[in-house]
Length: 329
Image 1 (cartoon, rainbow, N blue to C red):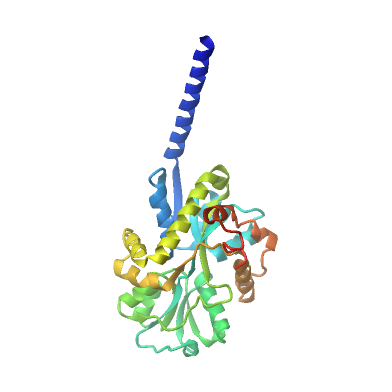
Image 2 (image 1 turned 30 degrees about the horizontal axis):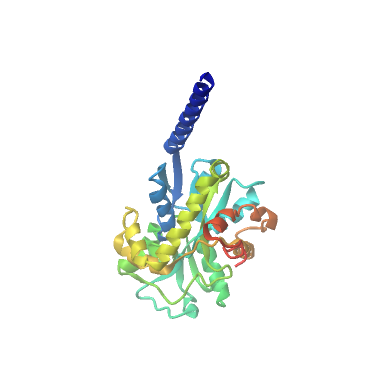
């Protein structure tokens, strides 16, 4: 009898401990970094689904590099930022402080010109005064696409901007620039507000397939919570597929966020490609382009860059091989 009572007490204590552990995890605040851009849609879907089980807090950033710094330091646990950013990380850090687990988007950086400036194709960009956010993906997309279409960086007059969004829009409204290369939804903002239009040039037609950004998890967080990482990747895959099928759903969900004007979202989503594929080989092409165009002095070793890409979660979420989920596409 005593043995049975002791066994029952031990089992009860185990259940209590398990409940307590689950409760602690549920109360843990998980911080997600985001940028106010329409291609972060799957990131917001993660928040909606996980918010039912965990305490979440979104942290807003205006530049990919700032989100990367916060994630590497452990200030946030999850973030979506650029493939170009991981190239810099692989050059700087001996070992990864975060890992990419799923792709998020391609394209999403577009050319917009003033309505009084006629651009019918790539050749018409010659001599135009362009506003470009320097040192990041927008400038990289722009320079690489120019080269792919037979133009040189010197074929356009460049006005450098160090802050995204509003300064570029204001410069275009003031007619200080004729065109700009800019993230969505800022390009769509110029169109909706009546002073800009999309010319028939696509900056995603570049040497690295226009890969833009991916979902990343802090290394320590991923080690502790691989189960949560799997949930996140599953949500990204499902949301991406749903939004690609149903733009109305994508638009409706973005309209729930105060960062987005409904009429801007309506236009912006038509100029973005959501893509959960995780592009390692294309990132290596991107790194080569960064070196050629002078963004970096050397490319990271393949082995170092490879470490940042974790494919086990996408493989499980999709039932596909590494090659099929983007590694060698």
